[in-house]
Image (cartoon, rainbow, N blue to C red; front, side):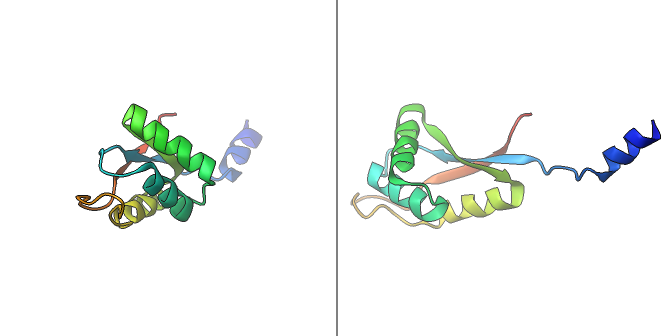
Length: 103
């Protein structure tokens, strides 16, 4: 029994995971989403297209699952990415949020 407790103490506690959610707003092109996820997340074009489709069809997409601090950073980078130059009346960046992963 003591050995089991000692082993449990040695294991580092895993940090809670968070999803970075990209929200659809009908004001950004697929090209914008693809370019953004390539630049901010290092996703290839194909993955960027899949994310753009999911946002368009479901209203949201998970772009990353990570620690809370990293998720907050990536959410803030999405908010700071800027407007879509291909849409004349685009007001700014896409919306994003973070949410804890239910385990």
